[in-house]
Each structure stands twice: as structure tokens, then as C-alpha cells.
Image 1: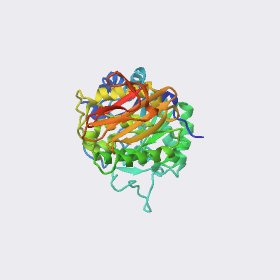
Image 2: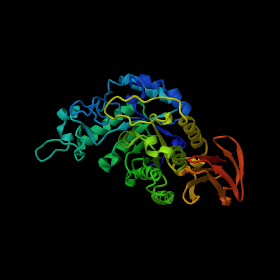
Image 3: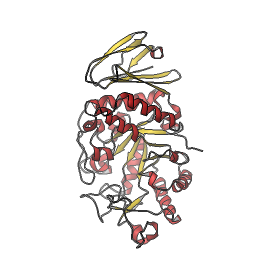
Image 4: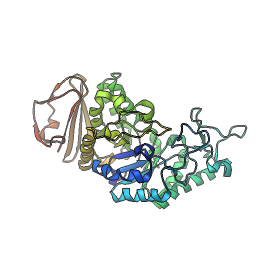
Length: 423
């Protein structure tokens, strides 16, 4: 039986924390000072990128990759101590938020303690040498899950964090590279420690939702949004891709929607760099679609740069128009069941309007509805509403004003702007 998406998370927004770049010191203690701001933003779930010590051997850059784990059951001393991590988790919980820890199960650093203590945990070539999973991942080496001892050791490491720090679940790195039988075994044992365990997979393989994960990545529409912004595909193409996705995605799970994350920001460009003028309408759109929305570190501050992945590159925290926009969208997601994730949300109907220049999303669950229209053109558009499905009295979530939509109603939307109504 599939794991149902947890109902208590259905209205929440996920926030990815890059501890290294978040503050000048890059520590747990310094990040704690941001928790009230994230609470004010409305965040419900904090995803912490890996906090373990980073490999020294074949390290990339000056500080190395978070995803090159040297010891699964220890804390990177650059960030702080295990006690300080526990205090951070406790404070996040006290603020009414949940915590996910990023988990790297496919590979370790070359100097992970397992290399010397348990060489049989690793994949080896015909000469008996360990090797990277891919040629350009030269700072890590792959684990061998055909060895039952590897499975046991990894589950024990995950249990350590559940028992010692009371985290609420895991975001699992490159989950499709690890055999499904491991994840199935792990899920059974981890649930004994935390029956409400939440697991997010970095994958687009739907079969991993059968017995293990409750959410996975939406790369398909992420790439489609970038392509719309660069006029490589039309909104009609985007609509077709969305329909195909919703027709086939399991109803008991959720897709994680995003316009940025640590990989895309560092390697493909910040959301402003990729989406340009279409940033704000796409920020609205991805919150309207079925799924759980993600905000990456700095996204609410209008981050304009690619954060370096292997070196210090502090986020420029500044007041920005994106903060109040995300705040409104997060609150709408939380309070209007039409936008809730998985089975708990409403139906989704879309229309492409004005000859392919704007995109309408209508969500409905019982007496709750959300109607959004985003203008993806450089023209002011006069939008006419002729579908009785959308008629009624609505509240504009940005202005707070009431508006009645009825036959042949029309209103103007400025270039690259939007309207969002709820009832």
C-alpha cells in the first residue's frame, strides 16, 4: 500500500536552507536568528542541506560539497556542534515548523570512516578499487547495496538522527540511484521510530512512491517554465505537459514544485536570471498548481546571483518585493483547502487566454476556490471572463478588495503581472 501524503503537511510550504551561505559565519547559531523571519514568511517545513562533516580527500573548491559525507553520525564543525544542531531542531519545532534533513545514501567521501573500517560497503571494480558513481563526481565514491551490511549501516545512521535530534523526516538525494529494496527496508524500520515520518525523494521515478516516499521532484514543469520564459515553448505546450503530468501522477502523493533550489541556482542560474520578467507570474503560478511549493535560501530576498557551490558565497539579505508576495501565497496555500497538497486539495482546471499570452488556473474543493490569471506577455491585457464556473464574489488576495465576476466581466492585467482571487 502506498504511503499517503501526511494531512498535517498538506497546507504547508517547504524552505531549503543552505547553512554555509545563509549568514556570515555559516553556523547553526547564526541561522537560528532567521527563524522568526521565516515564521513571519509563513514557512511550515525547513529542509536543511546535509550537516555532516565534508570529505577532505579530492575535495572540490575550498569548502567542498555538502554531498560528500565523511561521517554520517557527526556534525560539520564549521556549522557547530551536535548539541547546537539539536537546539536548532528544538527551536524550529517551537516555532511551529517541521524539519527535514538532507540524506545522501548513494555515495560518501573518499575519506569516510567506512572506507577503512568496512571496505565491503563500497562498489569496487575488477581490480578491487572504489570509484565515483559518475566521472565528474570525482570527490565521492559509490556504495554497494548488494551487501546487506551496507543497508544495515545506512539505516542505523538514519535512525541516529531520528533518535538523537527528533527530526521529522528526510529529503533523499538522488534517490533513484539507490536500490528500491533498500528504501523499502529503511521505511519500515524508520517508521518504528517515527510513525509520522515524511520522506521526499530527489527523483522523478513514480515507483518510489509505492511504499517509501510521499513526495518527489517536479523537474518537468520546472524546465517547461524556463522554456516559456525564453520563448522556446508556448503556454499551450506548458498546459499540455501539465495535463499529462496530472493525469498520470499518483493522487496519494505530491510533487514538489519549485523555480529554484541549490542545484538549479548554482549550475543553471538564479530564478531571476532564468525567468527574468516572468519571475513574478511564475512565482504565483507554481503555488497555484497541485503539489508542495519550495522556496530556496534567498529566493524571498530576490536573490540575483548564482551561489557558489564549493566555496563561501554569502546571500545578500535585502528587503525585496518577493517577500510580501511569497508571504501572501504561503498564507493562501495554508488557509484555502483548494490549494492543499495531494488528496486534500481541490480539482485543477487551466485555460490559456488572449491567444497564448496569459494562463488561468482554477482550483476548487467544496466551498473553497482559488482563481489566478498570470500575464506572461509584455502587453497590458484586457481579460474577459465568460465561463460560469468562475462567476461569483471573490476576494483579491493582494488588495483585499472584493470583486464580483459574472457574464462578460473583464479586467486589465499589466505586463508580467497577475491577479489571484479566493473564496
